[in-house]
Image (cartoon, rainbow, N blue to C red; front, side, top):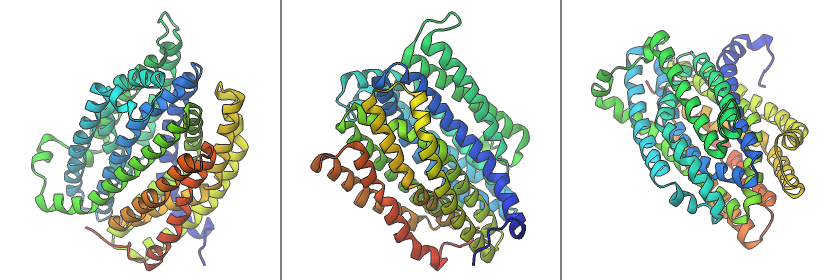
Length: 452
């Protein structure tokens, strides 16, 4: 029987809270930053909500690919840290930064030079494409520095310094909120800039976050202070080893993000109201999912450190606790979304009665799947990746999205012609399948490996 009592697990909870609370706060702040953007832009109308939603879908794809790469990199940083072999950490981080620069460079070119062409693939609404392209062209200026911030942020958590990215995010949110107020609506002598003002505010906020992260790392975390020499002296065997583990994670997140984009395309074809409803729902939902991602990231770090130290049985025990906690917390969060979600939507967005009703139904449907989402977050981000079992996690996620979620989305929208909330329900059925398909691997404990 799994014991979750605090007295019996003081060390477990102490480490969990030390790692997860700053991550939860940081993710909550990041989600709040998106909410602030959406709420303020929402005052301009549903077309502008849909426009920023589609434009940010491109950024979303980039961040998920980077998330995959950094998750793979963090597996090794966490295990090297647990093994106390710190001299290899800079080399691993240099690999991650190189990949970050390459990927963000590609997305910058797409966002800055081809915004209309990219967004035209996602929506046939000329107004949505026009305003979305104006927003994305400006925001794309922050893609490269955001990628670097990501790489350092993930690495600081793996070596026990989660407070730095949290502090940077708090300051970034405050700046973004203030600049949104000034630039979108025209205050303090500035002319109203609308959606373009929101984009400028976002870029400035991300630049400040980037500067804070880099200053903090090079000032207080010497184990991560990479130099140009680190990029040319990376051992080839380490590159191959990291690539072998990280590549499936990158492919995983890449195809998963493409799946999410496919869902967005389906919702866009249903109508602008559908896009706005899903975007608002996802934004509100993300405020609550930060706890799930906090647990997932904490499990990844704790399991990785423990496996790196060679304590296999302890890692297996920790994993059981994380999975049990994920179910309990997921149920509680689902209830909270049902209770608080309608209040947030009603008071933060200017919606027509019809759009409001669609949004609330969609929100309640997502709340039903929260326990499954939390459980799967631990499986994918924590359990499987911490021990380098990235090929199985890749196959599990890609199969569920592309063989179940996407076909069901197409069926619901174009064959059955169901409303968007019913299509969302079909799409989330893949979460249940993921739990069932991943359980045998979990019970086998084949994921619990020391990689370094």
